[in-house]
Structures are given as structure tokens and as C-alpha cells.
Image (cartoon, rainbow, N blue to C red; front, side, top):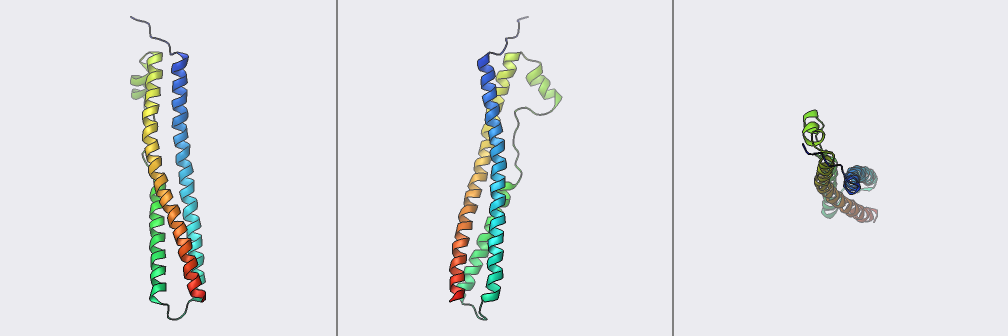
Length: 165
């Protein structure tokens, strides 16, 4: 029986780098969730304050243009809520190895040290790519939400200017 090869320092370095990449994707996901939550909170406050202000300032007969602006504002806010919610919605992130004994035994414990290290490094790389793709989807939804918040603020300023005339 041939002696199992020991992992080289380069193998271990590659594994460590893949672990760092994997951890970075996990941290990025948490940061993106925080950004989506902050956007949702701030937009909710802005929209609520606008609604309260408008209730005190509005004429008995607002124009059709004003009503259309308010409807657009509310629709944009609903889209923002949906985009933020979907960006925070739990996704199936993948881990390098399933957390059950049979998988650990088959893929790591029963093989040589070097093969186990290389297999883990490869698995970390694959799962990191998958998790980064999920983060890219989250980021695009958060970017859309940011644009909607900016649009809503501009629309609120325009509607408030109209009301104060």
C-alpha cells in the first residue's frame, strides 16, 4: 500500500485562501442584508413623514397631476419593499462539505492528507463562486432600491413644492 502524500505548504496556503474567500462572501451577504434593511427603514420613515405632512397641507380638491404623483410614489415604495425583502430573503448558501458524518468520512477522513486538503480547497472555490452569484443578485436588488429611494425623495420634494404653492 502506497503511503498517502502529505499536503505541501502551497496546498495549505491554497486551502487557507479559499477559506478566506468563502468567509468574505459570507460577510458580504450579511453586509448586503444590513444595507437593504437600512434602505427599507429610511424609505419607510421618509414616506411616512411625507404622508403625514401632506395630510395637513393638502387642499380639498387636489389636482389629477398631484394624485398621479402620489400614486407613483406609493407604487415605487411598494416596489422598493419587494426588492429589499427579496434581497434579504434567505437563500441557499452552499458550504464546502455537508455537515454529516458519512460525507465527512467519504470526502475527507478516508483519503490521504494532501488529497483531502486539495479536495477541500476545490470545494471552497466552487461554493464561493455560487455564494458570490447570490450576493450579486442581492446587490443588484439593493442598487435598484437605492435608485427608488432617490426617485421617491425627488418626487416628494416636487409634490411638497406643489402643495406649498
